[in-house]
Image 1 (cartoon, rainbow, N blue to C red):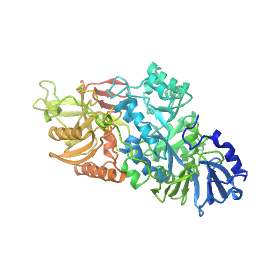
Image 2: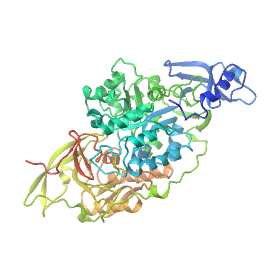
Image 3: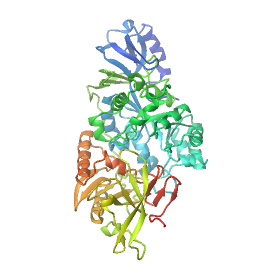
Image 4: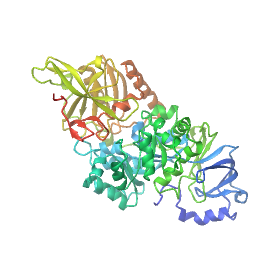
Length: 600
């Protein structure tokens, strides 16, 4: 694959690199006295210098002959020298930060490149929204190697999005320099049953010689998984069991082991490495979705590396899983992922392999961060007005909007309820009996059952999905969010109609975001005016705002980690078992709409 992400292409500077390595031309920079983490051979090498010129590595060895009058010599003082960290699957929008602010917070933690799937903004604003993010990323040192959203909508026919992507759009996007592959193919039923739409989207990616990334969330490792991989999909981040990750690796699929703000899968899936004698070359560590507070307080891939060590993964193996392995997954290891002659000079200095503390970050030969702080300026980016005006809910929302009619004459009704599971992406379908009052169905706090509504917000259609959820543990109030995967319609969950109406209208007025209200008061609100998904404020400010929202959740009784991330998956119709979209309840094991009321 052609790499457009280094300062200069190899063919343009190859002669200079050879001249520097041969001692005929001085290097721009030489790193000395470091301990090289050689991810190519899984060893630590002492006493080697690294010579850099034109943003690339010219020599790894004795660089004495490469040092000239103007060569910058960096004394590593015995620190470990690692390739820059690569996140093989990430949604920038899930951080609620703009690309600029995201880069500012992750680069000092050693992240030099990411493979983002911007399907959140694409679901709201379409291809033009993706182009905005791509344009913004060009001004940052962070290498944003995009994968074009494949599933907009996630599962056709079950929800309404702001846009739609098909094979034609995929073929066009694959010609962009910044596009290295296809975003996660969540429509695995379309792949398994050979649907033209899904298969053609993957085919256009493969025609362009680029990588198709996956999302196979079924706990199945037989014919279905084989069929999914055989379609050309190269990696998958949806393993929640060790056996899922292991079987994917055994079949030549890259298993992306996830540890995000809410999805804590590593404890289980790490066993695929630690409890089996297998080569780990097909394993990567990824974040998927990370909130500002996590990035600010714990870090990015450096934090996930520490978690890997806690799960008994060897430090060098863990480093391979964020360097050479993701580079190989995307057919870019000839340019990225290792410290070797000819490669881009993306380098991280580590205080120790026990702490994975990052002290210096170099991208394309330039020092961009030191001691946890950016040392290079990134210009601000302004999104166009149409990107910050995305709330188009047709009908006025009042407490009466949230009435759920019961069958005539019924005293009690059994309904399908969505039971969420803390820190997990899957949910359960539960049948709950609710009492009827004045001909209406209400939530039941004693059973931990709340109302849930999803309002279409893109095209003024007026469609609304109605249901019930359980598992949040709240005792009062309501929550609303326009971060509602993947269509990002307006999701409202609550214990009473008045607070639900207030939460919904709060977000309509501020252009989207997340809100918690109780007893007629707004306890917390995170405005996300960019597509109802992001805010261009600095990470420190966003972290504080999000922290106040978490406190508001706690005030109304919820104790689960990052509950708004769990809530955001209620409409995601590609994950088992039961979901609620603006079109209604979806059985995501059979992929069919089901009625709210269970027929006896």
